[in-house]
Length: 236
Ligand SMILES: NC(=O)c1ccc[n+]([C@@H]2O[C@H](COP(=O)([O-])OP(=O)(O)OC[C@H]3O[C@@H](n4cnc5c(N)ncnc54)[C@H](OP(=O)(O)O)[C@@H]3O)[C@@H](O)[C@H]2O)c1
Image (tube, rainbow, N blue to C red; front, top):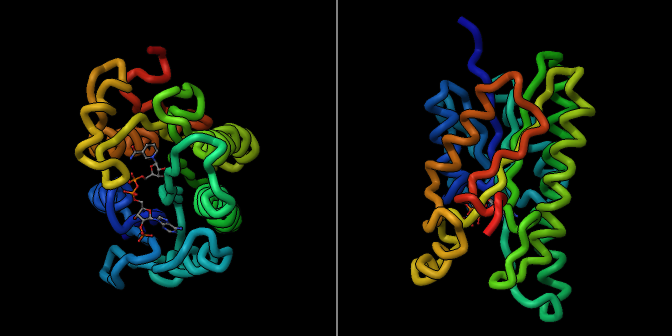
């Protein structure tokens, strides 16, 4: 019997990340799930690794867990991310450092470690990144320069890495999200946020998991930024 494919998913204690863990388990993958506060768990198909993606050592821990427990790493989902909105002039140095450390440093360290492992295996691989449509379609109602700065870099790097590693069979894709109902946004703000989407509602976590599963199962798709945003990227 072939060993199951293995996915590492960051930011997996709740929200979209936790749902992605279930989605990959349903696909028959073994999963290494990370977040800072994730509960210790070690089953036949799931291993958790607690830690901050901004810590360079965490990337090694995640790859080591995949190799030590399951013997391979096929997919990395860079889901850990934070959102700090507000007028640009009010952004503090700490806001800036926190967002860049989580969104950009985390992406860099995890992706590099995963790509090194995938290249060593020589069997291709897949990296999926989570970005925001605010990057390309700014809203006066939601000033989000830190999101544009951090997630915008990830969206650009998605296409760049897709080309760099296409010859090695390593695909790199992203999902670009509108507002998805998670703890990032309070229930009271949802009605206001509905109006930010041409389609008239915010998205559900299942909209995101369906998109990521599509990318995972589409060997001819790389460098794609799949918009799951209720039409925001098309216009207002
Ligand atoms: N929800 C939306 O509307 C929306 C829109 C656009 C883009 N996104 C992107 O989608 C992704 C998931 O969003 P979400 O709404 O599900 O977020 P969420 O509900 O706030 O969950 C974030 C997850 O990331 C973990 N996390 C936060 N900082 C971390 C760090 N430094 N190291 C490791 N894990 C960390 C959190 O767990 P711990 O606290 O245990 O670390 C949690 O599991 C993010 O990249 C976000 O930017 C979301």
